[in-house]
Length: 171
Ligand code: FEO
Image (cartoon, rainbow, N blue to C red):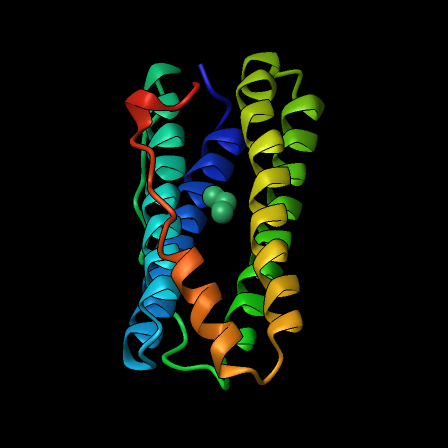
């Protein structure tokens, strides 16, 4: 059984993961309008991953006999000044998510909820990957600079990203 505090914190995290998905969909839409389909594909995969994150927590709350409470999802930004600005914003967003996950772990430990702490360790590892992949694109875009040709090539590379459905992912 989850404590009220942890249940609320997990519900807030479901909302944060769904907002992440929403944010990446908004970034995808921006890229669609900027004729960078590879960047749009990268964000589409990212948005799908965030749904998986949200559902993992959703299922865990039920498994612990808790109550899922879905709250309104905030509106993400509509536009950004450049392709680089979008990926920088994505990287900053992932850093904020990491802080949230760490706070959740702190709370689970404070409440001696070892099952929740154990569950959250998957997210601790996932955030290392999430930050690294967004930061990796930021670094590449910095190398690309103002070269249209290099951006064209990088966009093609980002177009190769494939979303791996949950059943095929390591749980
Ligand atoms: Fe759900 Fe991108 O962290």
